Length: 436
Image (cartoon, rainbow, N blue to C red; front, side, top):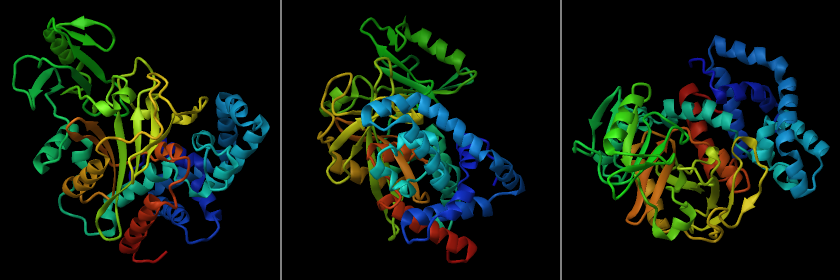
């Protein structure tokens, strides 16, 4: 396994999880099984350099915990005290305690609302971002969840947006079309053969971008001009020229702007609101939807619904498609609370049923079977349109923070946690021929 110095790897090493998880009490829960799998996998799969890094960071763990506690208490402490009545000193003590006992660092003390005594009692059941994104997902993916690894893998089709769309089209799964790819100053037609821009609203995003960064919306006007999301008016030729120029540094894809189903337009607030849906391989080899959150923009000038860009997420009841309260909380900044109504449109969030929910569940499960049968777990971004669900993206390493915060509780011992534990243990037994 190559050295990875990305955000999640750094958090993983400074969390001390490799050592802290050895102190967990032995039980038969899925959450504890996942923590134990993580601890052993990252050490067994690590090369010499990785192990040296983990050892070198060990003496700095107490200092890191204290620094992070001070920083995030400064950001959140007073707001939490005002909302809950819990004092600053008590918050500091609890942050240090959960970091030392469960490897949950201070940002996630606030993200998961562990200042709530009932939630803190279940701290061991939370699945950490660094566990999944910096270890377990890759282990499952590389080993196909303990099943035979096929000669052709679909991983590249998830990472590359153009391959993803082509793969969807080939397998008959509805996905957002791509008009053009603009790369290295050249315009490459995909779903649009015309010489000029189509007379419709456009959505432009980096070919390899994440988190909604670098996206631009161009609204088509009756004059033939396009209104940019920054307020400027340009002609179609000027849009193309600008994309050509910028694509010398960053490749872009140009897509039509999609519009949500009218039943949720008041929650979308002018952007495309999407559902993040989790599906996972189950005990019988099928693919099962386990969790979902509905994402909406929060800021007036935002053109994406991304949660870590300040958006709102509301948990969705998987069985009914009904929304619960909305929340923010990305990156541990949780100074505001929960939303029963949308702060921009004042539309009701709670108790709203998303349109075509049963169809959406079937759509995602069918997409997992058709598109990525060699992937154990996928986080899907799905738009609910007037004519049904439409796939926007698939994520091979989906973030679980948004789901655990939105549902006000941990995933470790729920259905997704049990499925992850099942697949991890089968993979370990197959690869290492041992029973943990």
